[in-house]
Amino acid sequence: MGPFGRKLQKLLFGDTTDPDKRFYRTFIVFAVGIIIIMLFAGLTTFFLSLKGIEKTMVPDVTGLEVENALVELEEKALYPGIQLRYTQNIEDKGLVVGQEPAPGTSVRAGSRVVLKISKGSAVEELDDYVGWNVDDLEAHIKSMVSIYGPLLSVKKPIIKINDNSQVGTILVQKPAPGTEISAATAIELVVSKGPLGQNRKVLNYTELTFGEVIESVVKLNIQFVFTSRPAGSREIPGTVVSQSPSSDSEVPNDTIMQFVIAAPEKTPDGYVFGILERTLPDYQVPVTLKVDAITPNGERKLLFMMKSKGGLITIPYLEEESTLLKVSISDKEIITYSIRAVRGE
Image (tube, rainbow, N blue to C red; front, side):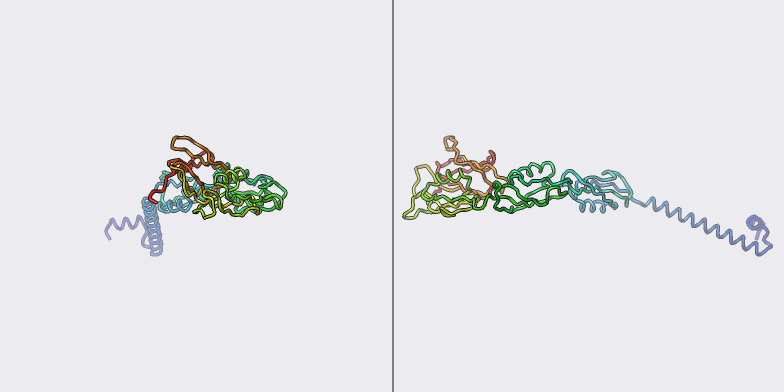
């Protein structure tokens, strides 16, 4: 060992002539060196790991269903947190209505994004509808759609029983008044169909023209369906030759009358006989059905007007060719039909 080595050894270990002192000093220096090396390696690894964490941008998931929002976050390597809350619109149920951090925020991968999920609208208590007319209730529910969404509905079919109350009066409702609701609810109703035996007696409509039949049943607001067939040997063309239910029978007021017309064998020159058939949507409440005819010279005449809940409508006619039949619901024209003769027969 040279002079410099001996000086360094003496500086670090002091007197090296004592073997025990020299061993302990060597051990201490070695341990301190190991600790320094470990600290250096740990700090180096830490800073390298920080440098390696990628940043990502928070996506905009507001308005998405929660399942789709979770997929969006997973694709960005973000961790979701969930908060549930009520909103004003039941249609928001299950949708993300807010998020933190805001969309576009730059965060580290693995960060948490809190999703605020709608539980739908909350209505404190169900009103008491006993004593209401069922048609009025359905109109009321329809008016609520713009405020709460389709929160309430009437369960069909409605149970109807004989009762001294006026026809259509709500006698029982389920859920009961005062029930708290926060989701779409169908109200079960028991409705009066009037006192026992209060049905209508069916009149005899045979041998009447279809125009006379329509005039009669419309006054009583009786729903009807017409079909036609060639006239038999003893039947009068252009008149009703059979009906169902039969005359003098007693039926509930909402029974649909079915009529068969013996088709006219001849029609005036330029006129056409036929039956217009269309299927309307089923309306929750009765609407005003109006049928007009506009002749080729522009004259407009009302064929009939009545209350209807939709479904199949049949309109027999004997009008000039090129006449337009206009069908309106609550003064809104929904059908325009141009009458044409069948050629080549």
